Image: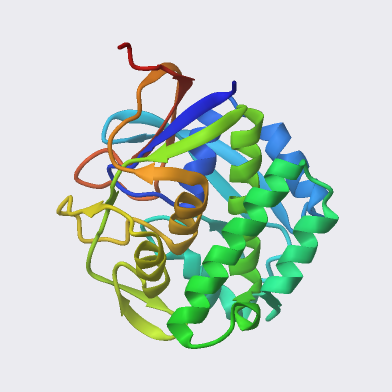
Length: 273
């Protein structure tokens, strides 16, 4: 029997926070970089990490650096607490205006010849994201387009997260209730309320348990929501687990409480009768 994992999300979840927590828990950065190479994106994207402090707590911050950025300074994609699931729309004038649709992204994943579990998880996660986006905008999932930067961000976040859980030999994943956040976020279609429409649709589709932690920011990105609803068995209480490793992934901003995603990895502990 493999391991189980619990995603403890007091300040939410995003793709880069997942990757940071996985690296903190022992997944080699070189392994994730090799996944990027297998996806054929190593000339477009570079992964790197650093240790940062959030509320006095040390955590791993992951960065997705764009190598073909046309501008004075290449951005790094941080998809939490700054609406960078929509970073595309902030930098689109300086980057190739390329759209990738769901079938394009599915082909990239399938052509990478990844382990079957990683491929299955990745394809399922992207389909959930596309179904939610399509439902919000009234179009078919296959017609949903991801701008170039957003597509690169989501591909790396989702596939490397799935690969990281596979590297840790995780069979089952559980997740805490997710904070609703609040306020507004800027995106391609204008100013939107938080949770973002796609995030809220994913929560509706999967009856996700949420709560209010009092922080009025975007705390759960659409990518983070898609990862959790696809990979996690259920939301809520901590499962019976004998903890072997804990990884901390840092969000972008300093918040009222430490802005970290805490990944607990261990063995299932059966109840005694």
